[in-house]
Length: 202
Length: 197
Image (cartoon, each protein chain N blue to C red):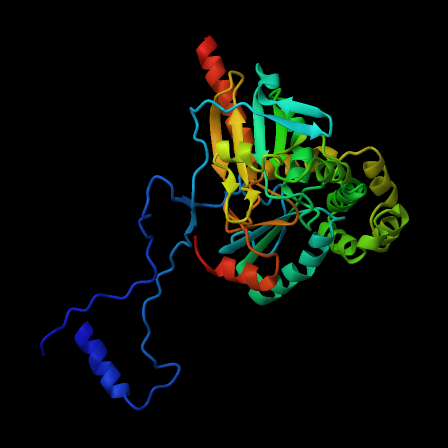
């Protein structure tokens, strides 16, 4: 039997630019601060093959919309996904963004970050009213005095600013900004686009 | 290997099931986005300009000789998101100030639109109108989209002597963020430190 050598059909290959002097290829910025379990708020296994990092602002309506989309992505991928949330409060535009971030971090200090994070996004319209978050903190069984004190003394503001600066260095260009497997996601903040980006290895 | 594969396929002929169908190796490749056109490159002298920042005041690039200047060309005011490029720069301004850098934002919108936009987004830097003649300054920097009639999303970092040290053209629809600007400003500092030593 004669063997016929056929060229294997490969996927699309990188094309040489026609006019090298004017056509450049674009690569989105990389996450400057890697995800670490000591510092980051993580859902899912730390060593999962896929990582999704979100820089978010609790008062931003687009982050509110993205909250549901991330839940869909997590439901779809389950333990294949490591999701981390970092603060990026746009304090110029959103007056309650910083205090909401501090509220979530104060809950984190007592081990209930994700519960408070979810609560804040599910009740974005109550962000100006501290009593709502405090009430929920009590419901979660947190030490309310410690919780209130840490917020009033801005104990966690330094961490939030570190998140913010790390985000700026990573090329965060607004909220929400997602990093899919370490690269900024420039597509839409919807589950379909995120899932597609996560499954395309860079 | 090819022979066995063909034999196997012949055996399966007529009995193709989803599980048995022959598979082609999937090569996952990197998605390539190309940026057409080019902006004024590093090493070139930044063309001076004089544009309105208010209806009766103009701002010139030469006014800022002696300090680094960031030029941010952008398509239009009032993009419908709460997290546009200029709002981000307003948030990041304290970082830019650490380098004693001045930021000038430029688009072809008229000055009244700029004033309302700057007030709404609480922008803490001049927003200049490259309005009449339309796009002249943007063109000088290679940052004008002729087909659309708007400035491209282009960034420049100009050093204290008026030379472009870093430039970046962002693809359509991509907000470039501030990381490139900050890296360029750091490099300026490093270059100055090595010159002085």
